[in-house]
Image 1 (cartoon, rainbow, N blue to C red):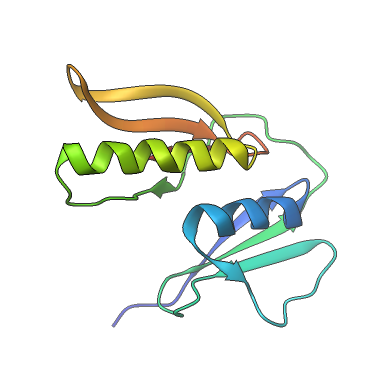
Image 2: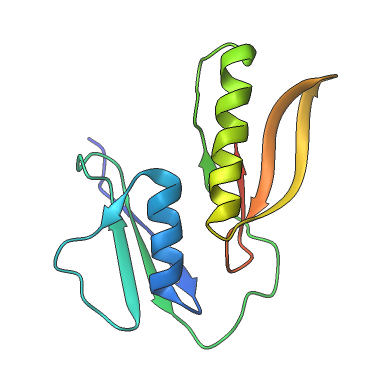
Length: 126
């Protein structure tokens, strides 16, 4: 039997970060969660884990030990996957992310793009 769980994240601006990750993952604000120092986003279908964001006074000081991989085209061939990855990267750049670098699985074959969310947390788009 699996256990339900929520990913908990520290944030300087929990509502801004929650809005970014809702866009990135296709999530929505958790209904009924109303806290000026916290925010939560959930899978609208109710199947995947929630992500909670709590305001903390200290800033980010080191590389994440855990990060989210946004998988936009799992299992698709590269000619279909790469345009979807690039489109998602562009969408997230417009939403406040920063692109760090591209990683290639083979010469000329995009594997994933390393990015930072609006508060500098690392994640990948694949």
